[in-house]
Image (tube, rainbow, N blue to C red; front, top):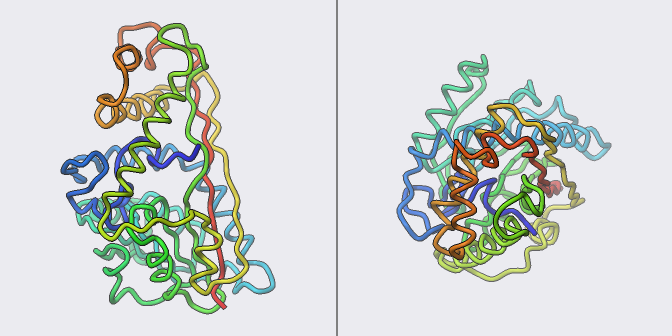
Length: 319
């Protein structure tokens, strides 16, 4: 099943009312139907994106290959990149590294996250070609200008009218430019099916709860419209051509180091905050034990902890 939770279960930065980039991460988003303090979540979002960097590097290398094709402008001709739903700017900086001739603009509704993005870019020596823009999809992009590459990761599905959001982005592409929508994939796995306590299949049940939560979140978005989530069709419906899709693995085998374990613990901690009320008593107890730092079978100590997930990237080109 698709992992809609941006690695956790929390709203993401970048779209209107969405969860990994806000859209209504503007401060009152609908994921768990409570107010979300995006500034408080900034470190969590940053750590999540840093953990995913090996997979994101694969995706940006693929984009360079696509831009090298005869119909493309070539990767070195990419002079302007928009990262719409940028959050704290981890991916924005990766894009700046992948396209060294380009100005990169991180776009997000939350100024506190953009401040972190600017700080990161400055630390990495990218400040002279790194910009930020406060805005959300689909109506907050005025004044952004056009671009050779537009990247939007896990933000579009947080817009009530996803087709309108795709069209808004497509309209800002320069001729031959690429729109990239990172949507869909496979939910993460980190434990064996039977990991020594609780009922086997815990992660599958957690995923089912996440899917129900996601459906409620989508239904609660302003202007929500049901649509078949055929992303290549949505891209071509916005007037783009040559759709391509590709999935990339994030495969971190056991044994994990301390930082990797910390990431997984943060993910499960967020799951406790957002999903625990929807789990049965046995699974809540299992989740609590996994998070117990003193338990030898908890995430901070067990030797078989791993991470395996897949993220799908959909692209299409402006005529």
